Amino acid sequence: MARRGLLIILSSPSGAGKSTLARRLMQWDPTLSFSVSATTRAPRPGETDGVEYYFRSKPEFTAMVDGGEMLEHAEVFGNYYGTPKGPVEAAMKDGRDTLFDIDWQGGQQVRNSSLGKDVVSIFILPPSIADLESRLRSRAQDSDDVIAGRMAKSRDEISHWAEYDYVVVNHDVEQAEAEVQTILQAERMRRDRQPGLSDFVRGLNREFETRSFGDRQ
Image (cartoon, rainbow, N blue to C red; front, side, top):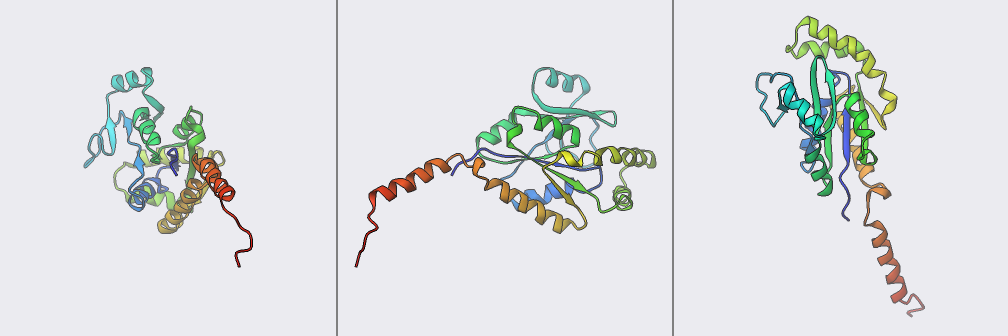
């Protein structure tokens, strides 16, 4: 039975594992459509425009916002990030779920948008703050000052955990992935996610009307 696609939001403080989980979920279910964000930050080594992000100048980004082309947007560490609306709406109409790797600000905007009723939001927590810092340092991508800034912001990000439908503690990435998979499987089967279910049940009732269940001996 056909259904509208879901908007699956993964959020976490930087370093808690949401991007890793997003990649693993895409491998688990290749039908998932990943929402590629637009950003004004410079590409990192190995990043390609249109794959990890759409890299745009600040004037280009502002023009997209003013033109109503963004589902959500926010400023993070001096750069702008946002989700182009068109690809998300197209995926929903095709019945494909869209996966968002965004922060709490973006998640809040998506939940409050016209597409909010189709959102499933999941917040990823680290097992400890010490583990969170260790993960950030193990990337070897950011300076000590940048890491300090991310750690300072993490407390505020974690304070928004209760705004989400589900919370997963990422003690072990395989276990966390299994828990998120279970959430998605259950959400896809919810009665209100299956618009063809009423017609299916009416068909079952018509079968009752055309069949006889008397003594067949």
